[in-house]
Length: 368
Image (cartoon, rainbow, N blue to C red; front, top):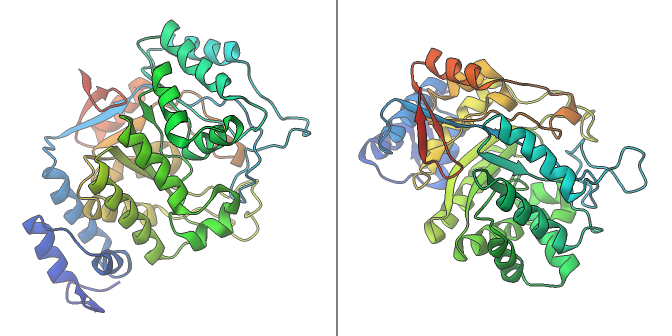
């Protein structure tokens, strides 16, 4: 690593520091410099300065949520995924609408306010299945936000229904949905997307789902799964694309990065270990600095471990994610991490912050 006098191309670290202090936007080249040359602790310090500009007052939010899955049948065949199955596989499944709602009911009894529901891209499911899920949840559990369906799933709905993207989104909205998660982004660089899951489409496909969702009144999150075949430049390319879309629509509530888990995936032999904690913290810090139009950056105790999640709160993150009472996608890779509401509160306090429960849309609903 270099010092603050290091210069890479035309992007010098002293200049970057001055720009951050003045609240100016950094460039693509400067983002690459932070990824490659800046001292890790310097990145964290700069990120925390940016965080304070978003009215940060020592509060760290979290949401009580769960992440069930309705099917593991998928025709996209991503090489990084250990979760998906083909219809003929013995352990392939698709839950009925009633079975999913039973899961939601059990979660609601635990105080869950958000359900992040995702599955594989299952071409056997009609659009009405998804609409019934949204309507059923809104009718039975009006206190719970349906944070449903990633961009690839919505594209799958277009294919089976023959409707346009706007038409699908409007039908989901009419059923009662208002937010969508950011899954399916991985790295928004087309070289990477071709290698990791070419059936998913290039980066513009993901961006267009979120662009149109924002246009019709949805809010969404942006995500990144790194630690596989991407370069530092492609990480900044990803950040540049989602920053540009936020400039255009203003519809993103938060950015959430996490590291690829190779267990039981086709990539396991090539990439036997997930990225280091230092790599995660650097990406967290650079993301907070680069995404100057994102109100929230979310740390992930779940994907990176509780201690690393706590440290991320000192690298620009202002949110600790959710309780995630149920989750199968990471579990399929052999990565299992669980918590309770009380432990989340304790972890935030131990990090030196005040825990605050929030909604899906980052409305603060309870202080601890």
